[in-house]
Length: 284
Image (cartoon, rainbow, N blue to C red):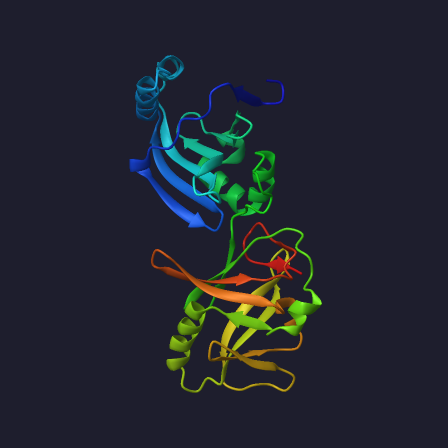
């Protein structure tokens, strides 16, 4: 094709589950697979043969022999994973796909390693910085189906910022509610951290300038409450927020989620209009 896109009539071969590790991130799941293209095609052909659809996959398998890491980006909001993007970081022919199962299209673009460098590093950078735009091109059903961003809060926990687009500003009802609310899990986690710090007077939540979108969250353990702080309790935890940070976090709810061995504080912030692709900042 003159636009550099190869448009396939067939939908892509699903990942081989025995070789794929899945990572859930809100409405998105990412599968990491070491893909042997000949084996994968053979497995797909067997499945298709079992339902009477063998011909095209078996023909496609002839003469192919490539391998490498495949990254499968799926929309998992409706229970089943629907692949929207695939990055095939193969040794011989690295490429990537835009996929829509709803509209039944499978568009593939080749990578030029001489110009774009290591295919896996390139793919990870695209996921880190261009995922919303690529999901939109793939026709994701919901433009808010975006990978969650992450920022670091000291050494104890990773903060996960839910990535949203064009959310309305906080309403008056939100502004009149508790400034920040903690889930039971988040409260238990913070209580355990406070127990390790007998001198701490409160958990300090705030924002600071950072990244390409402007602000990042901060979670600290304060030895004293400062003049001008908004001080309140949620879940039995005393929380202090400075006056400059308060408008940016008003109405936010915090939850603690566990992913493997890593714990994440997730901020659901109604004031966040956008987050950066690099996963380190947000804008209100």
